[in-house]
Image (cartoon, rainbow, N blue to C red; front, side, top):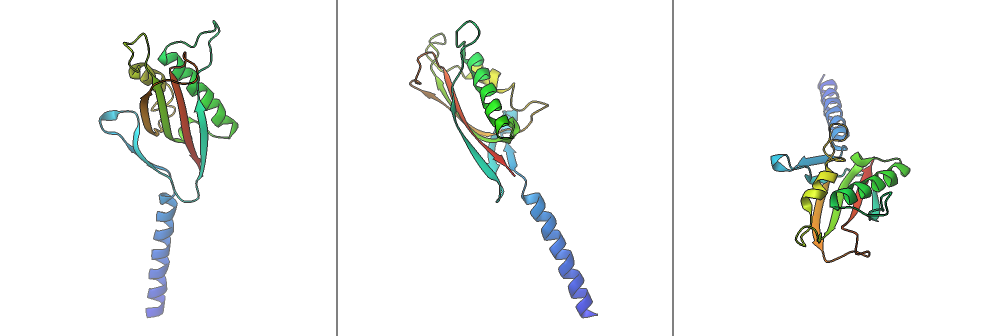
Length: 159
């Protein structure tokens, strides 16, 4: 009788650990306070594959211009979205983002963080794509082309 009870207990404990293990293997995102659309941290489970994408810069529009920070952000994020799709991934798989913003001469030579956020929020924290990456945004002195106001690099994770 003791042997059956012990085996039953071992079976229940093993089942609970297996269930916990399955749940623990999900990517965990901790949202920022005050509904700011980033994750304060992202935990990647063992066995997940990480994909490091090189920095992406804006493309010219149909008129041959790069546009303001918002337009450049949308251009960059569309390219990142395309690059991820080629890997069988999507924007929801992005777990880390680094954003390099150049001072906008039309914005008192300060980075246009508001313009960046307007473009960013079209891709992250939406009803269709609620996953938020951990993110850093910084102002840099310049990028390779003087017209570029933004460069973004991302890390994505897949199971």
